Length: 239
View 1 (cartoon, rainbow, N blue to C red):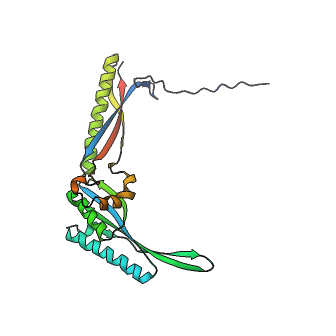
View 2: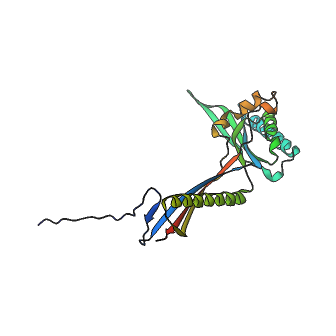
View 3: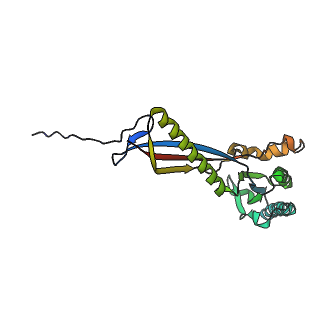
């Protein structure tokens, strides 16, 4: 004997305006609003480093140490707070020559330093001088704001107003009467600066090349931060 099974899936009905039937059978309407807030950064974080090479380990290590100490001394002279100067452990790597005998060709000594600059008008000059002192690795340049909480509040409020305005316009155009808001969802993206990672690898070369051209022709402009929020409001639809 053969049995016939009928499998039925129940899915909410939804039309192009966002009106659909919820899980309780009530008619609801959803509207999403986006907002983007441009923020002026008040800090820049420089992630830098020194890589030294040499046949003599102690000499190479001392050379690396001297450059790093000169960089730290310069940052202090420029008024960078002690808490905003952080150094990493020294990494020493031997480079081998795999011929008839395994011998060491040379040593590489690498140390990283992170510097936070609050006066953004000086950051390019400070970076240029650090490169002139011997800093030869630019791993990252990050603009950021210390007022992230209040700016998130602002962009959320802007997105809510955008979602409300959109819902009001759409429903009034087609004759739908909205009730109370029964659900709200939101997504806020972290600030993104305009200084792309593709520039990091070339920044040392660019700064040195433009060192004599003046700040107005420099390649390192201060980027604006973009903070985005998306809010979705769900309303009851009045009968």
